[in-house]
Length: 489
Image 1 (cartoon, rainbow, N blue to C red):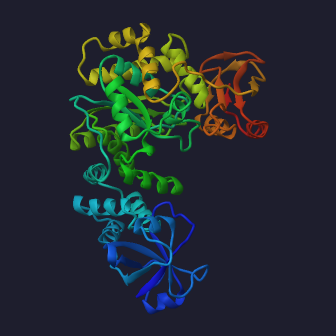
Image 2: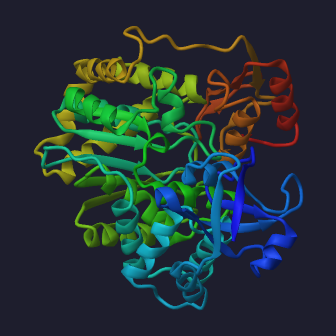
Image 3: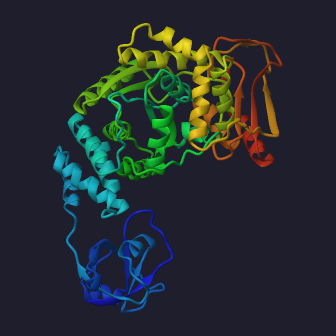
């Protein structure tokens, strides 16, 4: 059937959607969710779209295309195209197979990943794949095959260096901005560390949110290579490049569903490392009450899985288990965390952040079998060489020569109503409070924590200070504060 093209000024964010009227759909024997093959015979261009049926703005004899499909077809409005029933992608049958609890082969997983990237699967179909992996679980070899497939079907970075180091923290702890310490330390020691990080999903700041206070983080793969070859390190936003592209699509839906299948989480983390060519990877698993991993048993189990999948992928992986029961550092929120990082690099700053940064960099050197690792890390940090390298990276990424950290005009001091000793700091409540205040979208918003667990406090002692860009957000944070007890003393 030949139909005239009509552009629909709507976006799906991925899947290719075509809209037909009820009459034309009936003539083609199509139902919503079926697929059609669209051809432009003269230019030998064709795409496959998922069918939606609607009479809104579409006339008989027309076929409407959402923005993604319109661009993919490279057609013009009112051009004629051929429309025929298309077969369902093979990947749908593999997803059904996974729903039945059957282990998938590398070929089958690769077919699913290719179709996700090509937008041949609808969000519903991709969601079924996520749900199947969540309810039926994934074998470790499936996770390894998913990792490799995500890497093979996206861009990769290649460097001449035989050793490329990387790190990852599974998250769940406010502050904890250790990447911005480890990268300049390792780069100053002569190692290459092309670090791509995520933005915040549920926390008050991610590494990319914090680094963006000082320099652009939306770098192309070409720019990342240039920065790393010049300085030894970078801190870029992984979402700005096509590295592990399928994973970005899966993360979006996993976040919407609020589920994180273990196999997919492993694949997500390791794919990002392998796509930049990392040979040696340090994984940080914070554990304890209030963190993502609540107990030591689960932390040890996760540790073993990371090491095993690393071996399957030909990567040397070291896993450290750290204290996840309270925030690390004082600043919580992009600009405040940035201030902490610079203070530590200059020889000051929160002791816990400095100690953890030193610990992680030392463990990285141990993985590389370097002698006297801690001494080397402390020498680089205390000599100011790490800070000098940090500034080199900022400038290479397009930031200012003199870092200028913005600050909030509005603040509220939360004081102790009695004397006591701090017993607990609730990570989740602290994170939510900082986000209500405006972090990470408002770079200056968040919280500055002034106590740690076991600290003694007097009545009237400032426990933390809330910062906000707008009075409304500060008032909302203060209102939420009345219903919680983020610090128990």
